[in-house]
Picture: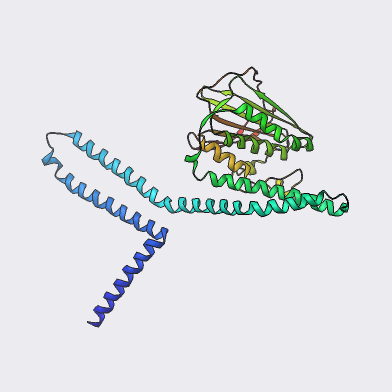
Length: 359
């Protein structure tokens, strides 16, 4: 009797503990749901199989069509339950990723105020004409680092905004106007790099998307090109490519990207060893990651071709505007150098990632 009570108490404790873990632990809940779904599917298959035993008697006049219908039903059920299992298995990962991005966004938002205060204090200090040269150089260096941190925070906030892309408003966007605005904002950086920027706009230059998002794509691509181009040239070509796609091509004559780094350039915070030396400016490793996310939201495509010492060509393809209009400018086709370049492509219209060599 005592043994029975002990077993009963242990069973109750096990059930209570399981219920507590099911409510609090998303992974335990997912594991339980997957087991339940698979068990239910096995039970359904068993019942249908038992029913199929009576098929020759009950459905003899129907012939082989009944067998085909039964097979189609089984395949459909397998696909349905497989999709359900996949959704259950990925639910905790998606939730954790969303929570992580929101946390990073909240932290970045909180950091903006103290950084702005520090930057303002340094700028006020630099207005003093009697500041020693050593102190001025130190404060100037600190100010540059604060600007770099501000860029990182801006990118982190952008990633946080991308957690809920359904809130992004889409409309016809004049990409040519955004390109000129972006170039104007980065004129000082281009001058410090002794780099010239050429903008060529085709007859069709309207995309269907979000103006702020596309402007950030242009800013990140152009800033990335400037950070790795010293005393060279950068061209931006905007023209209609194919029937329903607008092409944005950013071509620089900078140091280029190695093949082993090219396949990882869209990873957040990834920078090659060469880029980590801050000579000529170094990014945060978030620019291209944000570009890929924004292009994904627009159901577009990114192609990156590069080779060391031969520059980089980034092509972004976006859906053409629904009410596209012509411009007075004529487009000029920009061709790559006659060298073998490596290429990586992200096609978010079909969800394809491809890596290959381009001749």
